[in-house]
Length: 174
Image (cartoon, rainbow, N blue to C red; front, side, top):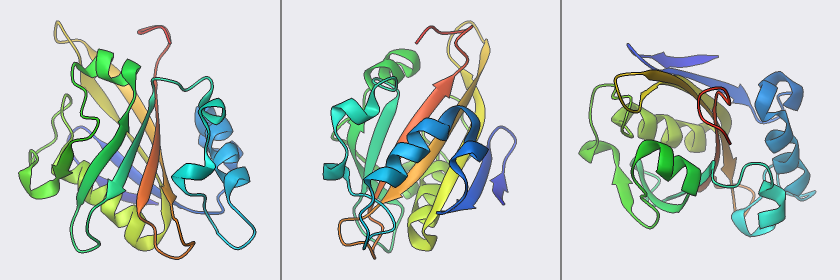
């Protein structure tokens, strides 16, 4: 279901049990994420996932830790190296807040919509998919896609988001 569309970006939500195959290029990461959940938990927690589980996505993964359930604020636990190379910034360890982010869509920055969408996914226990253009250099737009998977330490409170990003291989080699 569409959550929001702004002039550049599209945000969609899916139930936690949506078929992995319905996520195209992200089918593998979604299937792995599901396999890591325990029998009493609908989703895994970050310690359940190993570096080997991210093979093929090294550098294209980032993780947000929610700071407060009442606001769209996160500490960036991990910001993939390839993502940092493509976007030109690494925010590993930084705190990002919706009220301090650009209000309007910006194809080079994390925006208020991005962070409010992440908070919405945690509040409602949903999978998210975002897509839109990145304006990397020379005013060339590159299509960017991400899947956002909630995580939980206790199986009830969603407090982290595991993100996998994809950019067309023809544009930027993985």
